[in-house]
Image (cartoon, rainbow, N blue to C red; front, top):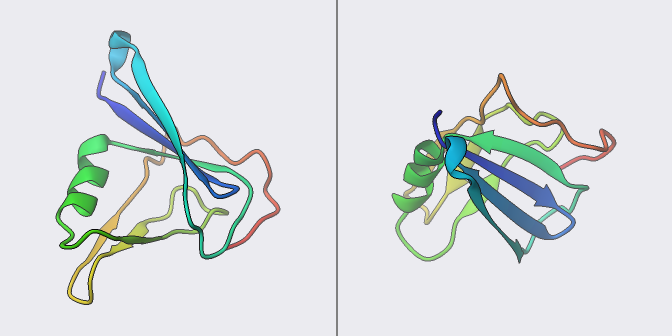
Length: 104
């Protein structure tokens, strides 16, 4: 199986779970600054897709734009004024939000 990266974002927290087949997984959570807070929403990615979008950004900070009501829509990742990338969560196996009543 391909590795899967599960990101849960909301309530000023980012939780990450990385799994790869039968090898198990690793997880961690951090507090984050959110422009607009919302209840937790889960997104699934192929790690290499998300990693390349983030790691190619120059500088130390990025801004991620997404719609928590649409967990399979593309994410916009911005670095400095010259960097922008788009990446798309997995469609077939996404984990929907527990609470559908939130917005960006």
